[in-house]
Length: 306
Length: 311
Image 1 (cartoon, helix red, strand yellow):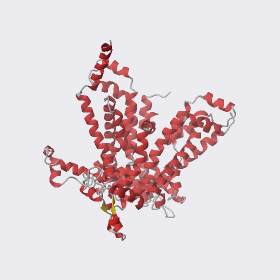
Image 2 (spheres, rainbow over the protein chains, first blue to last red):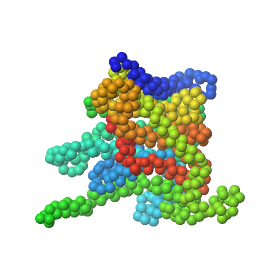
Image 3 (tube, each protein chain N blue to C red):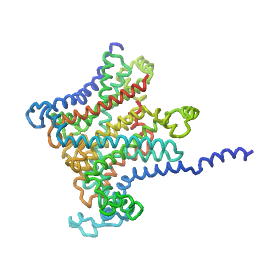
């Protein structure tokens, strides 16, 4: 059927939807970011780069970038590192590997909003499990640790409402939720490392397990790592559920947890400031796209598809 | 003779059971990790079974004592005290369903997740087939576009999508929850890669039999693609059942349209001391379906979720 135009019917709907749902909004965000548009107003005036200037000069947005980057640069290395660590340990144990794998993967499956609410309970200063567990350590050797002794004396931190801890606690929950995903990807990567390589490395004098890891496992996991790091970046840039659950207004103590997705939500949806919301969207998209392009470039340099 | 043949296996058996410091150390680390990972799940299920007093005082172990307690709300309604004694676990779970239309939320969740998946397949499958098996002008360009669109996280463009829907008067509708997800470029990419591996002979034979291109997709390609489709289904269902951000934006106020995550969030908004138990029960109910499905079909789930990593 060389003259058939069936393909138009097959590709057409997808193509139209791609334009309307994915490409058009990017253009819209770009245009809106140069205006002071808000829903319900008849028109909008052109404000040029004002919105971007605000984003890069005002202290609120400095806090936004601060919170986002703190979160991302805690969650990405830790969730990748713990994912790799867990995968290596599970891969090398003889027993119960599947059990650990199942347990570590559970948070990936659970609705993050539900688990955020549970964490809020666990971290509750008076009825929470975390602080009551810590209190049980009072009077033991743990008190020799200055921080712990202080906690016993004056009470343990109000994790989520203390400016000193909030962003790190939220990041911790991000790591808790995400490292199982990375672990599974690394486990898939580990099973595909050929056994002969280890034997060859051993013959060449790689005696310790560190040598074997450094010379064989790590290089062979290169493509997996590139992928895992990128996807962790993209996922952690998009953090929203925990922040909204803990701090429905304002982004945490002194805006210390004011991440970008929450800022978009607050400015555009809650306050109807579409222009500034669109500008944050554009900056956000730029970050994500640059990251993905770097990933693709790294992958294509190393791996060649046939 | 028997002795000789038994000896090696006996030795091997002993060596696997031998105490090893590194092996033990590994398990210690892994178990510690498991405790931290499981802690919130423990809190969630445990609190969903306990009475308010037990939650406040942190007593009663995992299951609580299940002693009947007085439901003040019931007394306020003018019932006798004796009629208002309730068992914590039963009280928590019945309140979860009674206080908010949780059943409705769950149904919404099922309807929305299922619609999203079916529309995604309906759009993606023909496109993937055309990209993999048909030769037409502009095919490379379309595929290039698909690769570009893979870069775009839909959550990130929520704002312009919201404006579009608002302009069309579609916020607070099922359409608002489903339409933005109708196109899955990831689905197209995935199915295209899968269709590339289907032999051309199969399609040629179907054409010889006089099948139309359309029925080839649904009667020849679809059945061969079941494994990939299943993986995609898991990927899609998990993402949208758990999604909170998008429903939060397009559904404002109209409780009839709430998805389970929104329902839970609403519950939290007006929870006071007595409602912690029912709230945890709600959380348990929302999280359970996927967790149970995952425990039953672990391998498939892990494949489905990590699929994106196997490009």
